[in-house]
Image 1 (cartoon, rainbow, N blue to C red):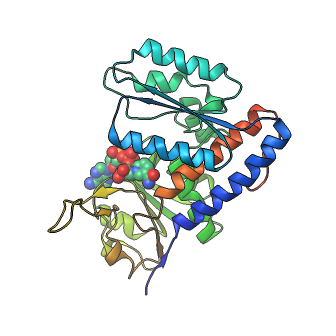
Image 2: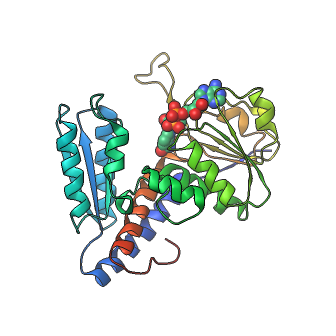
Length: 297
Ligand code: NAD
């Protein structure tokens, strides 16, 4: 068997197009564009790339992008004061503080200062709590994107065995909550799990969010399993390569002969993250403007 390749890039493009159409309708009803503020502290090269692509994608979707670039030695007081201003700014529907922050800044305190109704990354404890008890709030973009890919492929997930590998607050835990909400039987595996291969073997759905190159092997998988690979790992460069290849947490080449469907890396989960961020921002805009969030967003 050769697994179906789950094309996250194409799915993300269609989601972005849908968001763009609804963003135009929002502007017509609200008399203003939906707005996303992104705050970058310091000059981490990877963060600069992410912030640039978020800006471009926001503008391309017909929304307003407010970029705030602060020097690496910005004090916590100044950063919190900026977040306060953005919380109060009616043109700003979503606020994203790009992580990681420089060491002298307390990430938890900064996330806690964002209004939960503008927390489009879904990292605020209020949104984590809303997800845990099944209230509507904001769900972190990467796991929500994984969930969209899963439901598109599998439809109803009721009763399916799902194994999430990784228990981070931004991927593993919210992923498990979403699967539970969809009535899957959920196991969270992590660095202390005993005999991980046999835990993974019973899964109809495997979500790997570990950060270890090609750790999940083909012979760990159940025949026909649906595999969502969140990991992004760069291999050391081999002869003639300037940079090493990007690979996921799953041995794609081996897994595709056992799995029913699998996301590639790159081109799987990665493109979904920004598309869902745009979607969350537009949902925030509808809610902040007291307008009904359209179906299908
Ligand atoms: P993290 O480091 O916060 O968490 C990793 C988790 O893996 C931990 O919970 C740990 O218990 C578990 N783990 C570590 N070693 C393990 C082992 N040997 N066996 C089983 N579990 C083990 O990472 P994260 O932020 O959740 O990200 C995970 C991966 O996903 C990374 O590669 C990251 O780059 C990638 N990621 C991708 C996107 C995207 O947009 N595609 C977004 C976020 C993260």
